[in-house]
Length: 116
Image 1 (cartoon, rainbow, N blue to C red):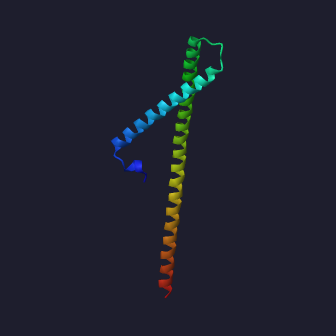
Image 2 (image 1 turned 90 degrees about the horizontal axis):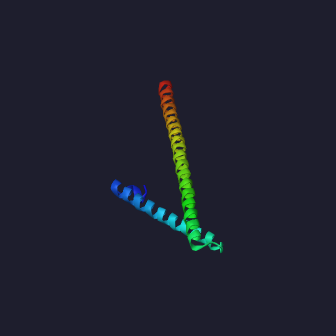
Image 3 (image 1 turned 30 degrees about the vertical axis):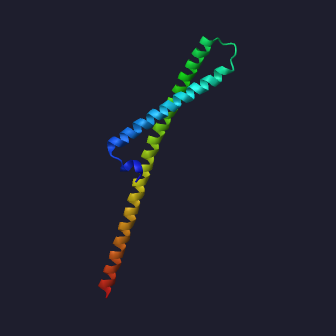
């Protein structure tokens, strides 16, 4: 059990909301910084053109980050389903093996007691 699982549901929701806000803020800052670095090398731009280029670059950067996060989230959901299915199958196999072993022990004891 993780520390997050120990928290009440409303605290987990609050934590997730704050974490999401911080990630979004970091992504916005990263986009602004990348846009500024890109525009810095374009000396011939006017100040208005530079601001517009930086704004468009940042918007595109955020759209790419959002798409990447969505793909990652979808893949995580897929993997969780796959791992849960594999876990259930392994658990069923283990249970079947234990049940078979128990039946064999009981049958062996029954045969030994009947032949005695």
